[in-house]
Amino acid sequence: MKVVLLKDVAGLGVRGAVVKVAEGYARNYLIPKGLAQEATAGRLKEIARRERVKEQKADRLATQARQMADKLAGLTVRIPVRAGEGGKLFGSVGTKDIAQVLATQHNLEIDRKKLEIKEPIKSLGRFPVLARLHPGVQAKFEVEVVSDDA
Image 1 (tube, helix red, strand yellow):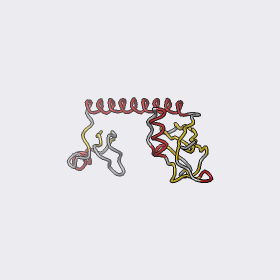
Image 2 (cartoon, rainbow, N blue to C red):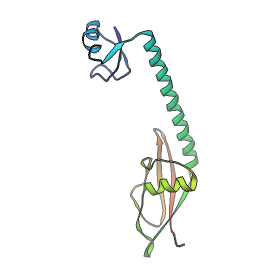
Image 3 (cartoon, rainbow, N blue to C red):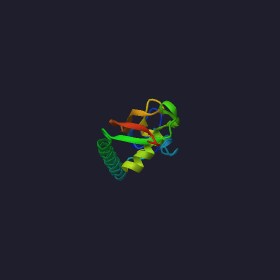
Image 4 (cartoon, rainbow, N blue to C red):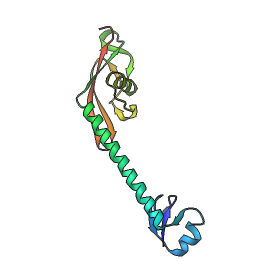
């Protein structure tokens, strides 16, 4: 008998999967416990429709990520900060600061968790930043930290 799993079942499959099981297992265990429903034609159509919608959403997100990567590639972001003697900063510049500057100066909304720097920036200069926008889509750009009194 074919059933549609409503919850993850160890050793059988994940939620939404259509699996073939023994009729007794389905009728006596899976269906009464609310773990599965019988796979009717209507349910199979609904599952196929949900999969199409999920694929379209994934394609749309990947396209948006590629467009964002094209905008970021080769971009240099200037961040003015207070600095002391020898170019040492009062505090540091992190991914949160970089995301805020991207939003205000370049109208690019990027989650700070998608930005990677090797370590917090504590001096003036140019530093590489990697933006992991989507699985398989990443962009490199530079952050230039300058003194705000210059």
